[in-house]
Length: 465
Ligand code: SF4
Image 1 (cartoon, protein in one colour):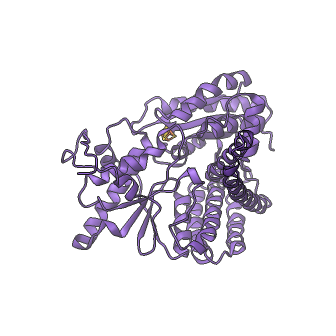
Image 2 (tube, helix red, strand yellow):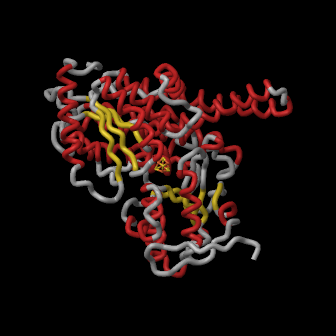
Image 3 (tube, protein in one colour):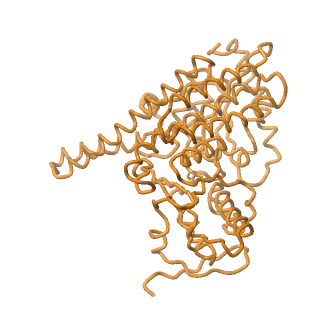
């Protein structure tokens, strides 16, 4: 056999392992044409997943958001415990979804009818390995070995080339990006209105309904690029959402969240930390998803510029054309994304005071000014460390770092930022999560919120008011 054979030992599970081929990692993980397939999107942040799926559907791709967290037991069965928690959750999600599909379709079930979406990142941490690991797991299951994993990578700034007809690639990328920004806005709207709602439950019910309205808007208008119609709908919703705020409730301490993208946005995985903070009197702003998308474009552009400089220095002129092309391509992408994001926030902020998003170039500048970290190292630590400094400059009353237990970039963030926060006397809390419940967690959050209230009082309310 030309391929490598390997035994994967499972902690538990019905059968010990089978054969895994290395060629599977290239043949069944990558960018695949999604026509006539069901494209399965994991649910990281609920609104973002649904709006992205609606956008893909507007381009004729049968996209579906999978339930999440219901298959955690399966995820645990097929992992050893050494993997990052998001890997365990997403493994469980796909296994659970396919199990349900098999039950629903019986003999008609065919794993080749699906493509499971699991993006990856290059760089020093383990996110790049999730889809490889999941490939190994799927290959050990006869019914699922032909299920392909559709992977987009930060290596090319999440290019969508190859998944749809070439002439539609640019449009689907633009519409998808808008769906990310609008999902961020709906999340921020929820966090802005829920602490001040007139009656308990109003904000959650309204946001759930709003998500459905925006899903429909993206499904109808996404492929036609009728972005103004989408934003008109968003404005209508914001006008309605504003009325949920009870003006008699005074503003509360403002808490910023940073951390690992999956954990800080997945409400089951983080044990609904935002709601717990709100219960103890916070108004919360979480770092956005668009920030990460912009970061991947920014980082590719930065790399291309460095490569061009090195090429010029070492007189490797034949590579210059390639670097210039990359600079134009990633530079154009970033410019478009920042323009679109700014346009949406400008329209929204004319109606309600939602927190603006951080510009990645500005975050890099902060790291230089404070000499804390460097974009050359990469990972989300770049965004988290600089994001915390920016929160401090904007006089937030406290910061929470939300991440999976043992997450490398987030523990780096914690090590660097703790002394600074102590010096600045700004309350700061690390909240690492796995599937267990820490008995002291709620007490830690309550104590943190007590400190945030003190900070709030000491500084005479909020900077923004
Ligand atoms: S960012 Fe953290 S949780 Fe995600 S892969 Fe890296 S180490 Fe794991």
